[in-house]
Amino acid sequence: MLTFILRRILTAIPTLLLISLVIFFLVDLAPGSPASEIPLTVPAEVRAKILESMGVNDPVYVRYVLWLKQFVWVEPLNLFDHYFGTAFAEGQQRIISYQTRGPVFDLIVQRIPQTMTVIGTAYLIGILIALPIGIYSAYRQYSWFDQAGTFFAMIGFSVPTFFTGVLLIIIFAVKLQWFPSIYDTTLKVTDWASFMKQVRQMAMPVAVLALFNAATISRYMRSSMLDNLGQDYVRTARAKGMTEKTVVLKHVLRNSLIPVVTVIALGIPSIFGGAIITEQVFKVNGLGAALIGAIHANDLPMVQTLTFIFATLIVTFNLIADILYGILDPRIRYA
Image (cartoon, rainbow, N blue to C red; front, top):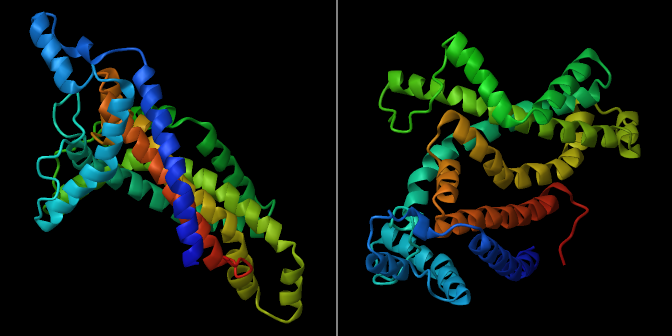
């Protein structure tokens, strides 16, 4: 197992390097310039000095190497210094946002709690809803429950999240006025009243993301369960006199979870993509809003850093899914 993990990590390193190269150059080639955000009233000499301080005039390969060094080495050292009180990164240049003129990772750290609160809650609720629905739908194939689950699943992953979000705002915020339409990112939970206010403002964005996730995962769970329910080992287990509960939950479910684990693991980074739209709809001041704002402001370091973080999450959770395969499936052995 350890050899496999090390081999996959070594394989992931050149993959991430190639991804970083593609991301950096594609974003750098995009139309627009940081100079467009500088007021026209600024003298030409001052404008030139501002652009020079941003490093815009440096060759693209120089900017790429510097950005990669800052991402891989300087920023982790700075994080280490922050938590352990050391000074390893003192005096080293960090990734600076064109828009705020502050470190990019400082802004990311500020926005992560809002995004993770909404996304983490939505994904957990989506999984808790999807697995039982998928299991029971497969066990009771073509029943009214299966038909209803299929109908709602089709709605869940067919309707885009921005439409679902706007629909919920119109019904529950405008018409019924049960929930607020705008997410208050300044709210701090200090007592029961503030906790309930947080729950109310999280209800709609969490529901939008959880519906999409539950629809996708439940379909995979149902399909995997149906594949395994017809296998010979299931008939053998029943012939041995095992209870139906033991057959389904101990044998069929464990084998059915193997492909679903991949969907769940790889869905964690991909949900950030849906969160970008959802955060815009509900005005959640998270990473999605930061990315959209950076795109509008031609803030290349922010766009490049956030995009590469998402790519790193995909590679990381792909590795985690492969490791979980070996835990769930005893037939797999890592050489």
